Amino acid sequence: MLKKDLNANTHVTIQPTQQFSTIRIELNFASPVGQADFAQRALMAKMLEETSEKYQSQPALARALSALYGAEYGVDVLKMGALHIVKAHLVMIDERFTADGQSLLAQGLTFLKDMLTQPLGNATDGFDLTIFERQKDFLLDEMAALEDDRPYIANRHALNAYFDQAAQALPAYGTPKAVEDVTPQQAYQAFKAMWADDRLDILISGDVDENTCWNLVKQTFAVQPNTGVKHANLYYHQPVHVPVKTVAERQPVNQSQLAMIYQLEIAPEHRFAAYVFEAIFGGTPVSRLFMDVRETQGLAYTISTDYNRFTDVLLVSAGVASVQVGPAQAAIEANLKSLAQTLVTDEELAMVKQLMWTDFMTSLDNQSQVQDRAYVSALTGQSIADWWDNLSAVTPQAVQAVAKRATLQVAYVLKGTNEDAD
Image 1: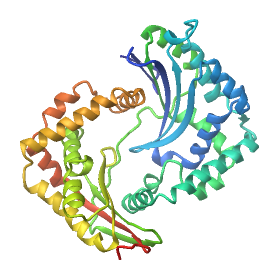
Image 2 (image 1 turned 135 degrees about the horizontal axis):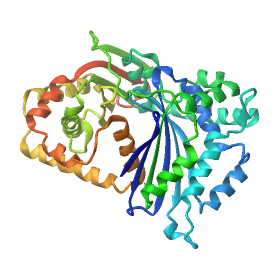
Image 3 (image 1 turned 30 degrees about the vertical axis):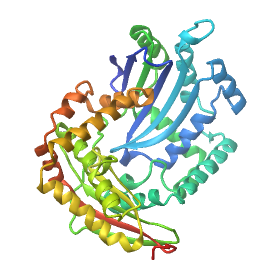
Image 4 (image 1 turned 120 degrees about the vertical axis):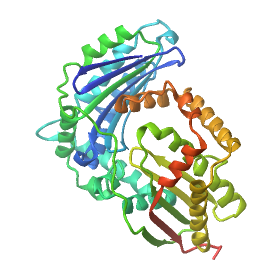
């Protein structure tokens, strides 16, 4: 693997491998959550995905991708810890499988430069108005569709109740009202700010030569004036709050949703103990919550956990009958208390570690996930080279220590009013 910097704020990671039949290129632009206007960046991403000065229509863009042997291109926004990220990707077939064996890497990088540095618009008028308004409608439709996803809504509202920083509580695309209010000029200024201020990580994986690849990246992107945030801090922390926030809402749905947020701040060097704890608690099909709360006690239709080490959030999500909300919450807390008071057995620990190792090895067959891991490594400086050794070193005492640090902060209930169970 080759890691080099084009400048103080542009970082390149090249992963030569013959494992995949494609070459994948990513450009990740990261801005601190508190400094990013999510709605402007989301609409800017839509425009960078759909058109450019060179490819001003969908047919023109389709022809360009066809010339790259049917390459896949997209731009999206996401949040990772305390960062808001605009992610552009291009996936092309490896030249070994083209009819003439021509090198597509240089063509792919040039295509990305055309799409990401020369948008359809200008600083005076902003993005093309007609296309911009159409993309705004598409984004608003996507956001409206999420309102029918009750587990998503419950988790979203619980996170809103948890975070002290308003921007940290928002989804990556902002709010519908914020999207509606964005003008073509504002989105275009967000594009200019992205190139001027964001940390940029360029990642390339596939059957490529490191030096050839590096020289092509330099030729294509080194002239970009990217001189903003030198150090992008990935971690968000906030104080523990007392008392626990309890929030209840009612909607005409057929199943209540329970979302419980625990703050779990773990030092980076102990992260593997946190991973194992979360897998045992609720992150696997053999977890305590699944086997006890769902299978044995029958208190939940669905139940799972999600741990975000960059925001210290341990989220427990459960679909329950409204009459079972109290018992389900009590059972969840009892299982956590058990992990904090009693050491897990060697057998349970070994079983969960094996499941985690299998999942990790499976993820290595997914080029996108491999590149995601490389990006996190670039942001944190933490390598995955010793993943198995770090996982193996986790002890029952380390799992117990993590369980003791989990502090309940939010208990949110989205109560159904149409439940047959009532």
